[in-house]
Image (cartoon, rainbow, N blue to C red):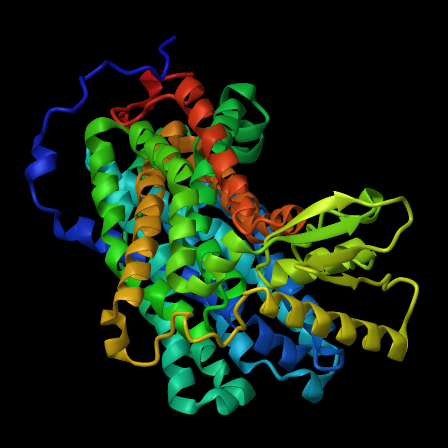
Length: 580
């Protein structure tokens, strides 16, 4: 029995004919077909997240604003939660009937679901059917995305010449970032053209409807493609799996590689990816109080400048290995996150940076009255007096420390010499609760402003209002910081498709690689903003939430270094001679 261990080629693999020859026309078509469709799928997926508040107002209008936003977020979360199930459904189909036809199905499901969201009548028109239909379409999107990525990655990898799988599959890795960028560009363009009022009323539908044209182009290109050579070879030899799910996860010799792929590669990749793109955007808007337009422009420029890193690091992994590139990206990110986010604060909101270093705010509360405010879908209610204080301070990006108070006492906050009592929202209701909330928020706002914390419209907060603003020093510095974060993303994400493809045999590859990928990215990554905010609220430190991605990235470095095999030299067409 031969293991996955490979002959040590030295640090750099010798260059081969495949390294220097240009891509063939067929190979270019394979990459174009897979990448274009996957960009489109990510574009569809991100649209909902970017427009969740407006969608909530359209489809949950029978409820109060706070409740409708909760339902909108629940529908968004549903897309993340079903991704692993989509990986199982479409992964099994891809290993049974083929890569090409399976991800033809996924793109059609994704595209039509997105298009129908743009056409769907709102709550005022058809009542409860509207939100139910929206949730169904959102879950269809998540299922399709769960099957799309694995199909595209496997299809490209099985067409790639030996020794260049990292480079070829890295084009697929650009698609999530390009899909996000495309969604931002379309949303901002339509919003600027129509104005905020018309965009909120009906213009939000246009980005969803535009997707139909992209769907037609993607389907046409994919129909021209042939099945992957590795799958055709397997079918001709009659060695395909009759039960891919049972074989991939019911047999420990295969299941252990799925576990190692999740913990030793994908989990770290996921948190670095979400930190560099989504949490950076969340941090700019929610913590540093940068306006929506400016934050999106900054992120868009960083994506434009950093996206080439996917190709660079994917190609590098063909020379020195998948593990060194991915794990180095996780480690460097973990080491540098704190200084980079502190630099971001000092640049984007200098007044807040000064206040964090000079103002002391103290929360005095019964420890039993304080909860860990983990609220990934917005449905939890935190009504204790301590929770109310901490949530208000965290939303205002205030740094605070907590002191234990006598059992049963009402929490209070001390800002300088000003002391403000909280209230227990579970014991009051109606007008009394509304008055207590308004009075408390007004008192907190006045106290922290007097202590030096800036208002949301403070003149020092970075703002982009026109194209030439990007050449100002403050804006350029932020673009540099965000581009560094994107480069971390490209280092961990560029080689991941090749690494996952090479870990599993052809007969179960689609199924086996898709599940750990989507658990890692859909759950470890998808829960990052909610987890990090809860950690910030718990500790009173706006940077404390970074310990979540740092901790997972470090765990991935340790597990990946010790247990994950290097696979860059594996011949995926000669698997009969390779066993576990």
